[in-house]
Every structure is written in structure tokens, then in C-alpha cells.
Image 1: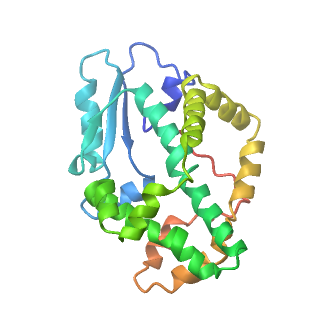
Image 2: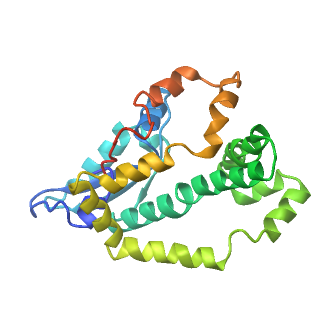
Length: 244
């Protein structure tokens, strides 16, 4: 398995004589492939759920090595830990957090009369720089690299509060008790009407009214890679289901 979802929530139940293991890359498939071709690798987390013959761990690590992942590293985990933390990260920080925060920040600035191009740079484009710095040296390096005014604004900001933490804890509880999984799987079983509606609703974020024009001006953008990654158009009219 590349994700613990189906085993953890019981949607797939292998018989006891089946080895069950997981190699979960910390990145999307096209990035896993790109890094492999470039002689690098995407880190993975690895787990064994069933080991009937005592040979499952070597098989698991062989899969990780074949993906090129051991060039970057593997962390031992469990199906439960991987599933619950992965869903939490997606919903509360990486997707449900940052995506909405950027789009909302763009709206606040443009509704106040600022140029869309300036708003795009200030709430979205510079995000990559901060993430790269954080990957190099953690949050402290990202903060150290910025101005004193930026740091002070970071420390005194009231946008993310204890109420945000309570909402995160609520989302985590829904993940832990299986209610999020049930909602998602029930919707998929019905033909994904809610998923398709939400995909259409959120597939045109306001900051993308200016984003494509600005990105096309970046001389360092590799349009070949971008086109390959987006070969399947994400325009809200498709129902591309993520297989967990």
C-alpha cells in the first residue's frame, strides 16, 4: 500500500496469510517519478501490518529502495499513525490550511483596492521561498532570513489563534473516529456528487485570475515539466478521484 487508509479503516481486509506492508512517499506520484529520474528520491514512511512469514520487512524496504526513496530516507511508522497524521496534515495545514489562507489573503488585499499582481506576490509567490528556507534550516532559518519587521509581524499576528487549534482538534477527532473516512467513502460510492461539487467550487481560486499570467513571465519556469504534471486538466469539470 502507498497509504494506510483502506487497511486502517477496514475497507480492505486481507486474509491473515497475506503480507501487508506500506511504502508511502511524502509527495505526489509525478514528483516521485521526477526525483527518481533525476537520481534523487522522495522520503517515505514504511510500515508492516501483517508479517505471516517473517519476510515482510525486507520486501517492504526493497520496494522503498526501488522507488529511489532510500536515497532520501525512510521512517518506520504504523498504518494507523500514517493514515491519521497524513489526513490531518492535508486537511489542516498543507491543503485545507495554506490553500484557503492564501486565497483569502488575496481577497482581502484586492477587495481593499490593491493590485492583483502585487497581492499575488505577497500572499502566494513568496510562499515557496519561505518553504525552501524552512526545509533547509527549519522555521528559525525562515524567520532569520526575513526582516525584523516581518519577524515582529509574525510573532504578533492574531490570524492563527487558539480557536484555530480547537478547529484542528475537531478535524483530528473526525479522522480518528472514522467519520471523515465514512463521509468520503459514502460520497464516492454514490458517484462522488459532493466531491465533484466541491471540486468545481474550489477549482477557480481568485488568485488564479492573475497567477497564470505572472508565472508565464518567469524565465526559469520549466513549462515542459509543468505541462507534463498537468496533462490531465484540473478545471473542475473532471472528477479525478484520489485513490488512497
